[in-house]
Image (cartoon, rainbow, N blue to C red; front, top):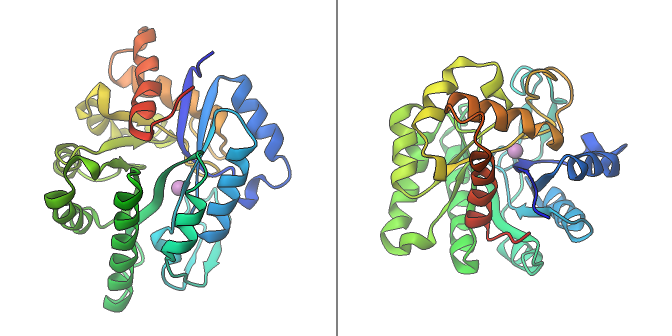
Length: 280
Ligand code: NI
């Protein structure tokens, strides 16, 4: 049996799910939803692999999120009022740690990595983010894995870096721009580089994503929840979870005029199978 839906970017590895993780995973499985849990630093990457190793239809992506590169504080406003505020102490990307973790067959990518200039880090902070991003691109190329990109307020800067690597790496450099929120020119630039674009529950309540969803080809678009954040309508404001990816997939299909096409939902799953090398 194959999953009906896939949530290519979620965080059931986060402490928000400590009290009911198994129930959340079971609800996803029973709803026909496959999952990729994404790490954001060493502890959460390790946890993502542990969960993947012990569950069917669950995979892991491991890496260092740009907000965990520098010491920083993240409040509720930034997290959309749905996440708990947190303080990051700042972490280095240690390739040996992640290389060892990637021995698991359930590890299907490196990330979430990229650039996040939402807080307007100073120059030293921006440079540190770029250095950690490049280290992760290099590990992904070495291990022949796709990237899970997190980019916020820094799309043009991220494109400069990716284009540079593309020159020598070619098709080996590949990945997904998660929670895509750039403009249409930037979207086209990621597509031209061979990247996929994925969208979250915000498509169910924020109109500005319509054009981006419309312009992304059916064979390059994917669905995600980014849970515990940004729950889609009708669960907006609650803690999000992978089972809700169905509402995201339905909205993407509706925007594309594919609501009644079973093949379209199959394509969302097969796009993820292709990029991440999954086999169900
Ligand atoms: Ni995320």
